[in-house]
Length: 399
Image (cartoon, rainbow, N blue to C red; front, side):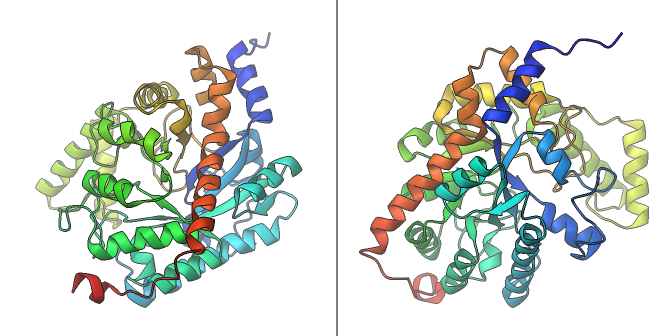
């Protein structure tokens, strides 16, 4: 006899059919670069890619995904023109994906275009550039990315940029420099969302003070629940209602489960003691990691772990300021029951079991982030009537 499906699981799928997820961060374009050198025939997401990727079209549909910010990330060691050209290649990948699958995907750059895609039953495809190194300290490059469809810029990735501090680097600017403030202002004028995932807590606070529009955390969870610098402190979460922004909880085990965070640090210490870089990709380092994990099993996160973050974030920031940014295809491990993009119903079922209302879940799924984009568009419309494109350079402001 087939086991009956839990009521919450059925309700989750029904709710996502009506209120699909608009996820804040998926690294599929970089995965396509790494695994297939952007050959969309060789790695066709119209086919089952479960052996290689977290993402394909069938699983997006199964997961109730109605919109996705595709990350056009490039490595932080790419600097200057190399970073710019690599980001353009990432943008080109997204544009070709949309052109290749017109019945499934629709390019979207505005709140109205997202709503149109949802009405058509297509997956709204937006782009976010992950790391200020992508613009090579050039506001003209920032504008060029916006013109190509990029709708958020994560101010840093794992390393500082000359004008902003990262969460995982040594403090230098202690927030934003004067040029960093100019980047934020120009993003406001364009209508590009200021993404504060990956930045230091000081940079978060500084950017929120400077921004005239709501900010975004595309894939960050609660630091009070899991003490990782990539997560958001409570005082920053508490500032979101006044700013109007949204914090999109991520699924990365090392960011959401304290035991997993501690395990990663222990692995790093053991690797250093043994003479390895725990992030290395050579065969010897991989063997070391495999042996370590065999002897010290990695703690496993679940949908309940992520729900703990969302419960806390709702308590501090309020339901109007939450979203989801899974970070699929950008991580090696996932929570046990959030293995890929088909898994969003598992999280929503968990939240239903915790008493979240349909209205709350609709806001979490996509209403909040669409509202943030729409608010940013309205701010930009007003600013473009009074401000010209900035031609200020980092040398002008930071010396």
